[in-house]
Length: 219
Length: 254
Image (cartoon, rainbow over all chains, first blue to last red; front, side):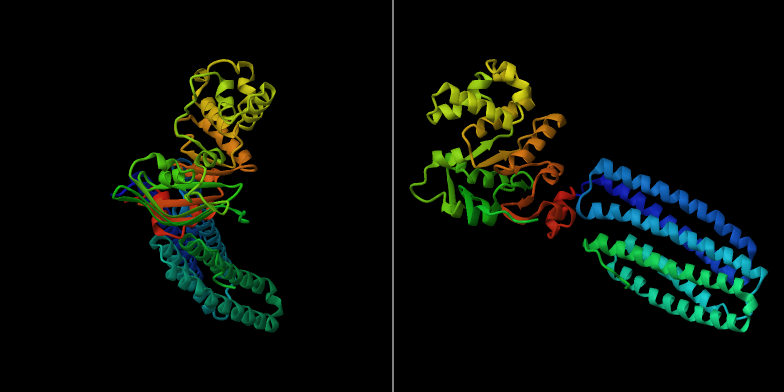
């Protein structure tokens, strides 16, 4: 006998909306990455519009979750799952903001192109993107191993960030007039690094939801 | 949470109604001056367990009990146990308020009178103190001589609590004491329990998960005669150890 059909249905709707929000964020990030590679300014504008949608979804999902808590009085894993929703949406929203930052940086770089390789930034963004995808999937599939694996990739992002900053500093030493550009590049790299941290937070929330234990996944 | 000294220590408790085993090898220690909630589906053994603690099950034909129930280190099933004294020290409040068809005053004074208190001033003092402890005094002090049956359901239940407190018990057993009450009366009794646990050990059977979560320090989950899980309440409702507990408290049973 299956009980709590209504609760399960509403939880299912919530999952669907979180999946949609995650997909939206992934799409924005993909576009921002493409904008960075190609210097396509139109794409950067689309990312901005997409982010407004993401913000609206966050509020809608959080309202839904709060109403479920109020009306269904969930306990144990159901409660941890609903509490986790707020962390998931909060971090997805922040990730969306970083996609916007990346898109803005892409626009600026198209006006004043960096003469050296942006490959490290692109790799960071690609790893970030894969991490977001895996983290949302881990949440929806209740898969602890997948959450841990996604968070572990943050080390790759951190390593690229460190190396890129060194490269830009070397470039600046040779081109002292390019301080403004160099600062923007480093800021962009920092956004991508922070993005990975937000995915790690998201993965920690998933592990907490599944085990009830607060776990640091990347120290 | 700091565990309080043990009031009841139950070891290897088996109980049969005829051929049906209602409790299976129950091992549990219940701390003093705390609220312990017993939860589980109907027929799981929680009420049977509650009634074992003051030997109310003795009144049922065909009951057989093995194992030991130590109340303050003494086995309550040992020969020579004074069952009347046990039930005075371990009082009980039932699901439906059951005031006697007499005045509010006489309801509360009933127990002390049975136990030999005759002095009017002493009885007055006991009645007032018990009604105050049961958070009912303010509402009934002007109608002590009126029939208890004229009180509301919530007031009647608090009167029953006052009646138990009047004989100065040590432990109060409660079998779904608020299931027949509205939310406001329920909230009054829950607030009252929080006061009473400073003085008394309270063990309560409830079908209301939220109530168990709100009022108890520890929760015991029974299922088909087994004690499945016994934990700090906050832990049990947030992160239960046993999958069966999870399913039951989440309402996903079966």
